[in-house]
Image (cartoon, rainbow, N blue to C red; front, side, top):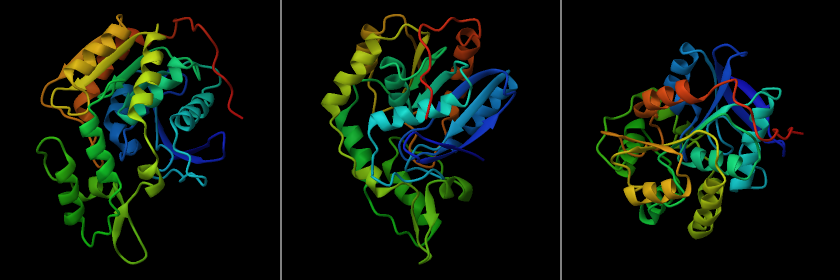
Length: 288
């Protein structure tokens, strides 16, 4: 595990795979997930000749909880900027699922940093408010489970399609065992309580989508309740050059799950588009 401090001192935990001199790819997980959601894809990217980087978002996994409870989109984008700064000026490709996709889109669209390519997994400016609200409500639940089987039952209840039970390792990525012996969610309750204005978010991310000129792919799980086909088409009107992949048999991964269903699609796109000879249009801002 490697550690990087963000601009406000929040400690971010991450991992790397592959040759540090290869084309870098930063993978960002969704709400309630951890860096481990992208582990298998990161290994595949390394085997294909990329340098893969995953990290836990602030308030998640092994990263610090924000001491001032700052879980704004801007704070997340600045964290990504600081992770990219470890590349010493080299330009990464960005792959983000859910929350991580929003962070990536914002970071590129508002020019926090430059990227070779952008992959958005199950996220677009226009989302289904009922599904988002359901996920947010789930994350606000306090937990306090006496057994991992109870954790699995809670996770099964939030999935948008039936799924196999997670093994103990997968379940422990979603919880921490407290001094009283009970399991509680690994995320900061302050993150779950952070106010989210979906209308303002859609407007902001739509502007970002219009600003995109780099190779871009939107990947949707066919069963996703968060991003509808209408949301996909709205994004493609904002970003006409983007590619679209609809992955059958996949939904919207939630806490404890991996993003493995999307790995092959992501890898194929990056092999075609994440080129080291691509000339950036602006420079990455250094992290303090």
